[in-house]
Length: 413
Image (cartoon, rainbow, N blue to C red; front, top):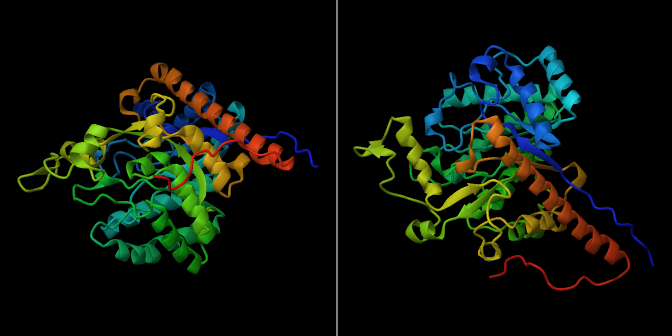
């Protein structure tokens, strides 16, 4: 009989710097852009994080989408209006070393299949600058969307992906980077009636896209940065989704996690269903899409009438909601990841993404205890799941001692 020591493996806990867009005031960081990163790195240490996911975005003066039209405003913590060179990288690395903080990925979340070719080209040029910055900072991955050409069908978008996005992945490969795709469907990205504005929103399309990538030699560059909030929004539960990937032979696709929940409003679902509000949202005026960005924000009613983002730890513990798949069961999420996915657990990142509307406070002093509590919650949940997994699947299994009970089951209804 072999005695297996108890040796749980924990994931790395970090935070997306878009959690507070204005940590460094705009009038300061526009003139000294890397100060924004330095101050975020110091803040991350105060919060108890191990890493940051460094948020990059087109500067507000350059973006094609007004902040007033965004449900969750992005942050250009990494300002790339001028090249991110070795001198800038050394300055950032000095701050990282001083505060013992790492960078999980550089994140740039935009529609990379935008129908306007000039707009798309601008985004691609920016993404390539993100690649360069990630390389100089020693990161091995970037995180973003695929997006969707809203003027084409989903099948046509697969062809567009092959023609336009694959060359971007080849550039990532040349820099030894992985592109991790967040799977948010982005329903409010347009004022049209399309719900899925990011084609990489579900395992079915992840597999279709990965097959295209494999055909062109960039399969290893395409991975998923899984966010359970989006699965809840679409009626999926994490355990069943992970089981499907394993059954299909694609459980290697998930390479990292955004830790953000979704709390489904049963009344909203009763009124509109999971497709969200379809009429009289306020994003159309006089029979056509409004040109006012504040009106365009109402397109997000496709989502917010039936659900609200959760910062981990801020939603009540609700076993019935877990069983009804109306909020994230964080403990089972972390357990299922270990049981069903092909992960290098100790090198897998859990990135807290803060988009809980009532707590999106642009005030460091007020936000600090909120984020500190959420990060602590995430860390302890992961540790508890790791401990249970090690005890059951390694220690007991080595001694042929059975595990009690059945546990949660995939596909169960």
